[in-house]
Image (cartoon, rainbow, N blue to C red; front, side, top):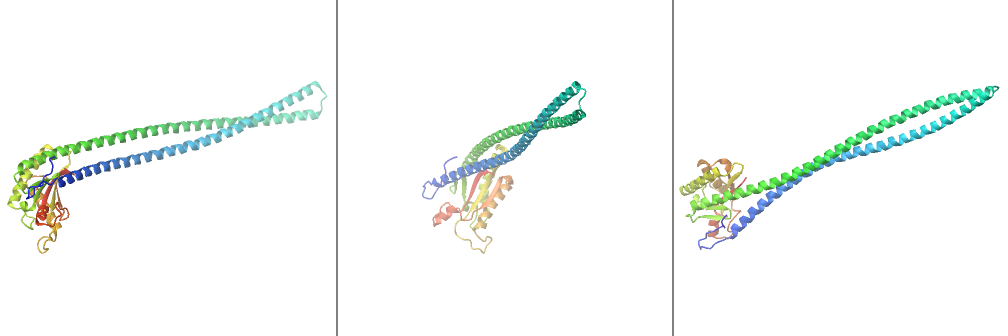
Length: 343
């Protein structure tokens, strides 16, 4: 884009407004990219937070099952210890019964008391066997329960691994999306800057012979006197001619800009700091600047420019080019600015 040029009556060149506008455009682009980055970081944090909640829940379930497994293993150990004690007792009882039966066989005159004792031992052995069988059943049940718990823990660990893998894949996709988004934004900005340069180059060729039309930064500036009668928002014949040239340049440019670039031409109305009388059509400079910008937009639409590509804004006297309190400064501040930008 060419350097800004301001033409004064004394012929001096003022580069400062163009530099300020260029820096403002750069800051806006940086702020936009930072906003996109913050949005991507927010989406990433939301995704990670959801994954962390799932992982925490799975870890909690694994901890609970691990504790339950430890308890079951402890119960199984107790049952096994009890079974061993019962088996030892059963073995001792069987040994005692065998000894008594041997004594009874060896001495045919054994007493009735010995026979009774053998009967008691036989009953005790039967009871011990029953208890031992129940203990074996409990141990078997505990083994099945422990096996089931181990299967559940294995399934949860598999689910946890799958969730972590998906989380890593999701993070990779988000990072890749962010890189592609930044690349696309940079390409869009470059494309828009190229078409903006083409647009301003064509306008320079069309309007180069007009002394009251200047380039300030990335904007074309029309002095209000070129377009409107004093205090009016109705385009004069000369202003309509200039806006017709602008409409033709916009229509030609529209055919070249790809449809995916969402560009607009912003028309900004500005006044000086002299209050309007308040008795006419406009109550203040806000209304006058807005009405003039709207008048330019409507004329461009009537010349064939799509309305969705136009924006009208009024700034009143609050964005002066020259803050000096002189007639010359006020004349410079009464203006219409045109800026090609992205919506």
